Length: 199
Image (cartoon, rainbow, N blue to C red; front, top):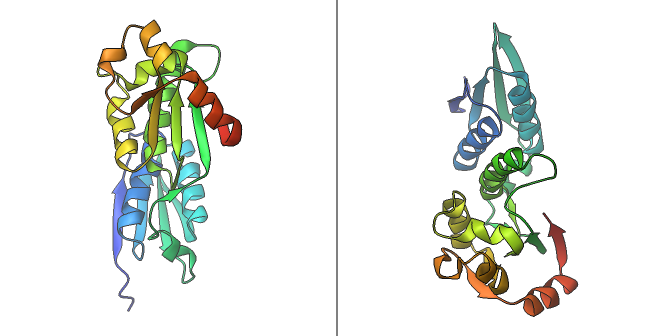
């Protein structure tokens, strides 16, 4: 009889990215366990399955009524060991240019931004720096709905830097809640030589 331990992650009623994030947390803490994640929608089913395969798990999907049971079985190869490696910081720098994601609906973009920071916290590879310019500086002030997650990124070693001119423009310089203040020359000098991602 197998001595492999099993854990269940019941995330029925939750939409992505929560099912993937909760599965990842259990996976990170228990890399040798068999994990069964229960979801109740096809998008979560597909995303949890992709996550499992990307981590080297064997993935089996079973449907019972409206619910999907995804059994993630660790593979006996070095991939599983990779989940225990220390935090990985990429060589990329993110330039945040506004306080919402994408174009079109700003309301939708602000909701997407909330999800973005949650996903960034859970990502295996973190950026080395995040610069905030224009209206994106509103995300690093004391009353920001994003502040807690951005603070956690800073605690993990991600450098958080806000544009001083932009903070002054929005009259929030005294309300900076995380990171440091710099100028556009320093930001420009940095991003010209770095692997930059603009959002």
